[in-house]
Length: 531
Image (cartoon, rainbow, N blue to C red; front, side, top):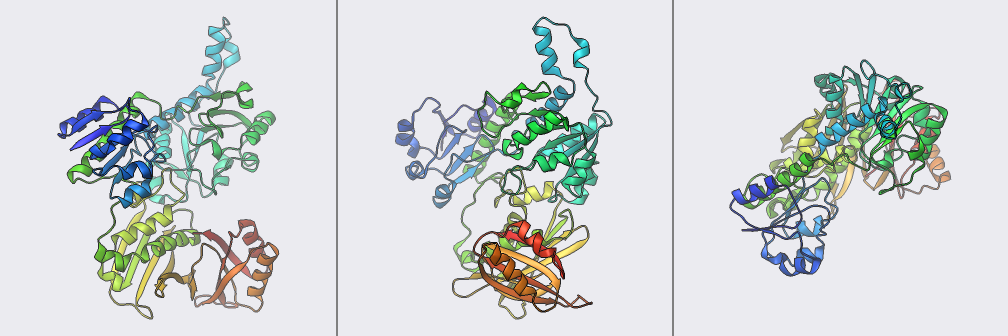
C-alpha cells in the first residue's frame, strides 16, 4: 500500500510508516494541481494544517482509506465527505497537551518573576535588580478553570511547586479531583474568591466565550494574576485592560489573542503583561509527537488495527442501522438534557438503560451518543464517536448501560441518568411515527410526552393555576414563539403538589428570561437548553 506524506513530519513518523511496510512518498513540494492529479494513487495520506482536503479532492481519491492529521484540529479536512467515502480521518489530539501545560507554567513563572522585563533591561545596558522584585508561587493558590487533559497536567505541575490548586469544571467526576489532590470549586465564583493566580483551559463555545469579563474580574481577589494559553476569545481584552489599569489584576501572561496574528495590541504596552505568539504547542517534541501519532493512526487504519483518535467512524452495519439509526440523535439529546438538569456540581456517573426491541441490538453506539451529548461543548477537543469513552475515563466519569427487552407503554425506551454529587437525575425518551421524531417522556421526576425541538426550557414549580400562562406571557413579551408545551406532575412532591413544565420554542430561550421567570412566586428552578 502507498502512503503520501504531503507535509513535513518528524523522522519518527516516517520511520514508523516504513517499518509497517508501506511504500512512502514525500510530496511536501507538490502544488495543488499535482496533489489533485496524483491523490488517486494512495491508500493513506498524512497532512498538517496547510493541505486542504476538500470534497472535490477526496472524490479523486479512489484508493484512499485513511487520512492522518498531524495536529489537533481537522478543519482542513471535509470529514463528512471522507466519511461518505469510507475514509477514516484521525488526528493527534494529545500531541500538544504536555507542551501547552509546560508553557502555562513557563508563562506563570515568567510573569511573577518579571523575566522578560528583566532580560530586556539587562540587555539594554541597565543593572536594575530592585526594579524587578517578584513574588513566590509557593503556598499560593492556583485556580484552574477547565479541568480536562491540559488543566490536569497544569495542576500536577503546580502541586510540584508547592502550590495549593483549586479547579472548576462541572464535567469532571469528584473522584478525579481527589485522585490528583486538587480541591474542587463548586462554582467559578468560589474559585475567583480564593485564587491568587488563575489559568483558563476551556473550549470556546457560545457559553464560554468572553468567560473572563469585567463581571468575572470584579469577583476576583485584588492583585490576581491571569494566564491564558487556551483561546483568545475566552478573555474580553478591553475588560482585562481596565482591570489592569485599576490594579484589580496585578499582571497577565497571554499566549493567545482574540485576533491572530497580532503584532500591535494595547496590552503590549503594559509592563506587567507577558506575551508570546501562540507558542503553546510549539516544541520540537510536540511536532514530532504529532507526526508520530498521526502516522500511528494511519498504520492502524490500513492494517486493521484500532484507530484510537479517529474523528469519524465507518457506518454501522446495515442491519443495525435500521433499528438503531433513528435513536442516535435521541440518545445524544437525552445526554445533553440530563446533564443540564443535574443538580450537582460534577458529573460522576452516566447510566443508560435500553428497553424494548432496541435492547436486543448492540447498543454501545447509542451509549456513545449519550456521552457525546453530555460532554459536547465542555471539553478541550471536539467529542466524537471514537474519543467520547476515553474523554469520560480521563475525567473520572463512570459509564454503564443495561438492556432489557421488556418496555411498558412504548415499544422502545431510552433512559439516561446522570449521577452528580450522589443525586441521580433521569430523563426518558423514545421515537414516534414513521419519521421517528424524538419525544421526551420524563424529566425532573415528571412524565409527559412532547416532541423535542432544537430549543427548549424546563421549569419546576408548585402545581397551582396560572403557571403555564405566566411562562407563556413572559416568553411572549421577550419575543419568543412557543412551539409546544407540556406539563407533568411530580409524584414525590408533597406540600402544594409539584409539577414540571417543558416548553419548546422557535429560538433559544435566554438564561436571563428563565431566571426572571424562576424568580417569580411558586417557581423552584428552570433550565434553558439548545440541542
